[in-house]
Image 1 (cartoon, protein in one colour):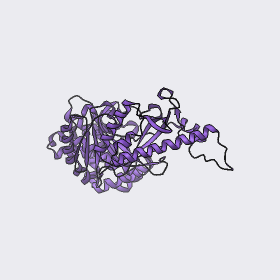
Image 2 (cartoon, rainbow, N blue to C red):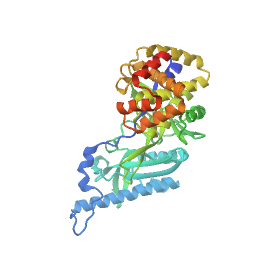
Image 3 (cartoon, rainbow, N blue to C red):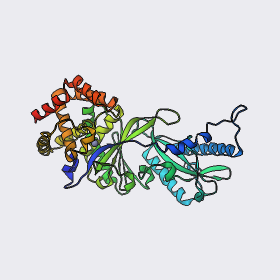
Image 4 (cartoon, rainbow, N blue to C red):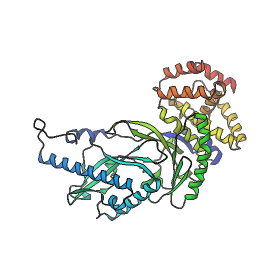
Length: 431
Ligand SMILES: [Zn+2]
């Protein structure tokens, strides 16, 4: 078994929690061929002479941009007829989907919604959806009011078709150009229920509002501990706890399905939305665990969310050990101290075999089942010996840098006056 949460709640289960990466913005192949036909080509007296086809494509792309703008404006203003007017009225299924997405986004409450067409992506023909139908890649930016500190990027594939001189959406989920894998945004999965608390918003499947409200309470119990430990926390956090398998992208760690993930919010840092930074995270709960997920699991994921914007340089033992440390503290605060003591004793036995810190290559390998527990004991030892503030400063410095053994050794000396062998020896002595 792996992960404290799995140990507490799921007899014989393998759920554990990890931090997941952000959205991939790959598919360079198609981007490259499109450079010549990109929207930046401007006809001029001295510039390239455009063919009739190229001029037609420019006009089409301009019309698509007008439609996207109108779609975002209507959504933001709560104007359903105007929103639906940007979709192909002949496609009844799409119109139905549109209505649901519109209702969901309004229910969640968006501070900001916008769609950017990826100009480096060459539109692809989709003859099955109509003569001249074109798929384009869209960057959708959503900022949930009171939750997201900045707009979050989602990559979509839209197909447009010409109707009476306008280019309208005929498909909002073109798999190939969207390049999204299996997972979908929670508002794309049919009806939802939304539950709110102080700085938390939970999205559940229809009929599961009670579980959503339970998770709001669990989240509200976890937030103060995370804030007190990390000395930082998001102003608000989204928790997705849906039954739909596609709310979950099938994250695994060490070969086991995770119980939940902290999924990073990527926010563009330039106008073309080609560069990003991590501004927050949302928590996505594995659909199979949504009814059991509790404050301990959420404390683990919220710790990841709090630390994520610092950077990605911290080694896995520190990232997971820190989150486990918060999770075990949550359990101690929740009358599970006996359980935590048993766990500590068990992992102390594992520490005897420790030769070096469980570096990333072996975190899920050699240590496998015990990686999380061993990492927890290392962080707990550091906090007890050097104080939370020093450990937080150590984490911050490593997160900001490259994941490099030389930097790690330097930071160990700087913050704890320790070499790695000395830390390992101290851990064994303390256990
Ligand atoms: Zn984790």
